[in-house]
Image (cartoon, rainbow, N blue to C red; front, top):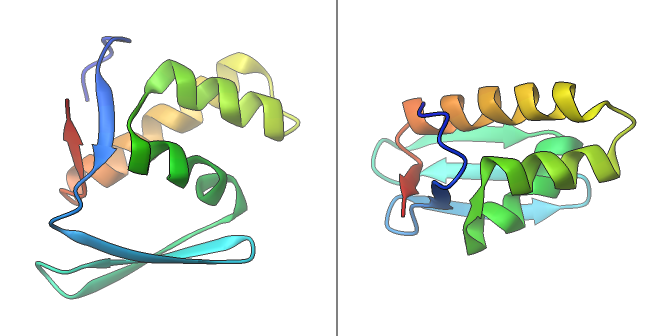
Length: 93
């Protein structure tokens, strides 16, 4: 994953179907028929990824909603984005 803070990440609408239920989100990779489950923290970031957001914006959201330091939030967001990119569920715009 590129660490450039200006990159906007967005969910690939042509590849991902999802449903938010309470504190969890279930994703379906429609290209591979593989399901993913997001926990409460990842679910809080999901709407921002649907709209398009930078890693810095996502880290700010996470730090504001969870009891974590900004540096930890940024590291968690980088890891989350890397996982989603590896699964080819995001595009960079």
